[in-house]
Length: 341
Image (cartoon, rainbow, N blue to C red):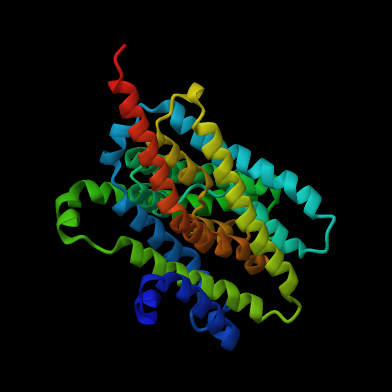
């Protein structure tokens, strides 16, 4: 694959790097009160656009087929919204004794509190041939749960910035997240056929808006001379993120493939990706709301910005291996069923 084709394929990750570099070069453009007016354009318009777009693109009718697989859904949601944040909290108790930047460590905790993404887990499950319907259900259901659970987890583990009251966080979440999501779903009911015919680039729209949010977040950082990023801490955080992802993928794979669970190989694939992937699209706007006006917001956001490409990279690397394992399991099952009783 040529360089241009690679850049085109990974344009969003390239976009994150360019957004941060642009914020470094001209932080005054995107700061609060600057020409972009992020306190209005980002806080309200951009965040609302992302969630309206999510509501418009979410195929709720596809979830019905996976609805009755309750045990699988419980496994995924308990792992991603209970075990994951608690395990990270326990890990941070140990890491707090080291010299790693404390705001990057707090950022690791925010990663643990995030719901599963609507896209990457489903795409990778489909690529392997796993239970796509279950992946769609858990990604969508997890996103809905995350609207309520994620802010509560963030407040439980980290607290909020002193400038924002608990009630104002939830009123803003309701107006910029819940309302646009519901409006998007209502519009989808009336525009379903037209939307399916036109194949609108929902993912691209959300990604572009997300880059604007990332840009203004880092404009605030680079305009504050008191904030410095320790490069050694950043490298250690990257290593920790890859280690955590691999460990959790192994854990979910190990437990979901036990005979006692009754899960199929296709179920295990959906469980592994949905339980360990975290949403950047939902995460960054939520951090922006919960930690509004907080000077270390961008440092807290860094681990989530690393986690997103890391989960796609690791998942893509593992696709051939998981696919081969699934084919072997399915062949063995067919041979077992063919044997005479």
